[in-house]
Image 1: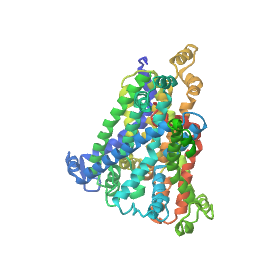
Image 2: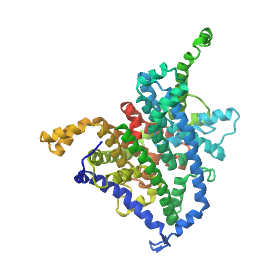
Image 3: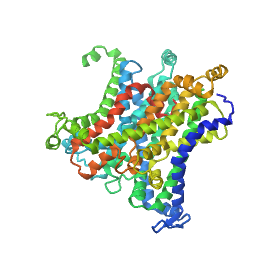
Image 4: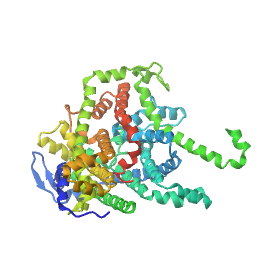
Length: 289
Length: 282
């Protein structure tokens, strides 16, 4: 779409700019400020240069948190994306059942993050939770507060429960945009189910699927509340992901310098992924007209 | 129907396919609903029943847990506080986002692409990065523990969200409508309110819904920025978990009540859920 150039449009954007600048730029500058200074309390600060950055890069705790974070994000993507596509392919195309599915599937997406945590915290308990109780009765030794593997499984299943619907709904939206003529043509050609998926559905879904993957990656990359409520980052540090680690550092121990340096590196990663996201989006816009 | 498949072996390829879809969806929805059912189930039990034995449904259903929440000010004020800042944030976000989204969808101007991208990065920014600076910023300007502080903080991700969603809807409105209105002598504000806004009414509704939702589900910032007067329901719940950890029934009831606002309006936005989550694209 070609748009006329009009610099006066800036006035329309100005309120957003001011508001977001107030809630994003000023805090971010504070973070930058802390990242290069040291304090001994009393609000007296000393120039520390890149010391904190070096410290963070050497910090085993941060690398461990990053490692756990990457494993977590990779795992949930590996489960949620195929499962989401699979569910989307099986959703009813239209009618009452389509609406029912849409509503029920959206429900977990709209539950406050900490309530998601609470639900699974209860659900997984051996004494009062359906899941924990059932597993216990089946003779499986399951305890997410003591056992690191169980904690991981709980957190991952929780995320799959929480967000697979997002992938499914996006793919469903992509599938809905395929004209019936495509399927009819495939039927005439006697294409197999796999071929229909590979050459008709998948290419049409590629754009939305990319959005879904990026959104899931970003959101899982900054996951905080859900695992925090369920496991509190434990047992030990087993489920301490990047955000939990950061909050522990910044608000728990008030290690401002390292926390700020860490925040900035965290933010740079986010910036990079946002850029990929933006490129995908604009390409999609151009294709969609 | 096992005998049906045996009786018609040649159709066995086609027949189960219809069924598998239904089976897959049933299993998936069951997986989604079970934990929620369990929460509802627990909220209707007494604590002695929860801890005393194991039952799939409440043996002696009670509304006591809900009564506790609705009569205790420290509980229900959590809902009131949440609703206040969420509504403030929703109105604020949508109002400032409307003109901006119009500008992005209709005009090219200096730095527009950079600005649009910058907004996106704020939607993607981890709240954990902002928690501490927000705390200090709002403390220093005397806004700590007020509703407006949380409402402003949530603008960080909701304003970009609203701009992106609204832009997505506005690009679908033909430009000829704007041009005709200007030729007819409409001023920009009058055109925008009288003609343009009704055209994208569903878009505004969807944007408002998502701002409401994301502000409602967010806990980290709202908990960091409040202590007593503006404490959101989500934070009230965490307190109960960590402090006593015993009143499971009330905790479950509180959880159920937080799901209600989303569940009430979800039917109206069901066809836009994907679009909203994908920032107005799809």
